[in-house]
Image (cartoon, rainbow, N blue to C red; front, side, top):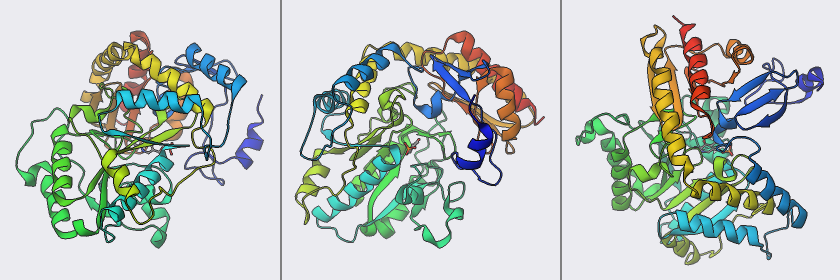
Length: 428
Ligand SMILES: *Cc1c(COP(=O)(O)O)cnc(C)c1O
């Protein structure tokens, strides 16, 4: 048994305190959708371990791919050297991404992939002859990671701005896309949110390198699903004002929202794309930033024709090999029916929450289910209830949500929903 008193004293957890650490469950092993705690308690990982374990835990094909790579070449530096898994993964990504979006930079985590995207944008603008375009814009309600520049673009209110005082640069924000996914679109720029983008660009585009946004599904910044037409409108405005468009598909990529990429719903192709999380099926920390030919060309034609980034563990062979296996599983196509089935189950299972007094909204898209409460949830109580209900959930603020692995069965989806509806009922 792990020494939890020692762990409480010495280990930080995400967004955690050393003075009053939150409770933690000790996980001994995982298989499929199930986490097994050290005392034998089992819980369904309804979070897919933060969007990553799309095929469930310890999928035999992923384990085999990683094991085989481990025996050959676990790691080697990427500066001046390359290897088959890096090439094979790039081939798969190029085949699945829109044409012309195919210049790939590997990195170790989503936040770093976002940093690389922002650096690419500035270097490309330099190459295009716009040295004044060094700022960034985003919509409120976004989440792009925890590194400095990424953090500065997260929602300025529910994000981390207040924790860092003046140290955190202020960027340019427009309101979050106001029209919900599935609601009726309005062409009125004052109502559809595009007027605010246009006003920002009209005033400041000559100082903005890029606009970054999560396509259609805003994740950790508010779990908001917005109308794809907003994204199409944003693309047109970016083009008109010379602003590059960065799409962050780190959470939504690889089937999660019901299409292979969330941007597919809008038919929008970005100048720069960030992917991560489920890229390795949740087996390894890994991410990539993909630039268009035009962006890559602009950087290459710039004053410093090299892209100035190069992580120690760039292109790690274990991560590339397991990502290949994960993309092969996706390519077999089963995810489409699985995600549609989960979406169905979530719609049915979460519907009873709509009538509850404390509930403000219930929304489902693909394999993502959200109950938005009127007030913040008691996360300590939820934590304890997870063990009781056998469903692992990790709400934040007013948002109780799940994104179960694609292999979750209808009965397991029903169980997740029942646990969520019960928690939502506490605020009645
Ligand atoms: C998780 C996430 C990130 C950051 O990824 P890390 O691997 O945690 O650094 C960035 N953008 C989005 C949309 C995310 O969901």
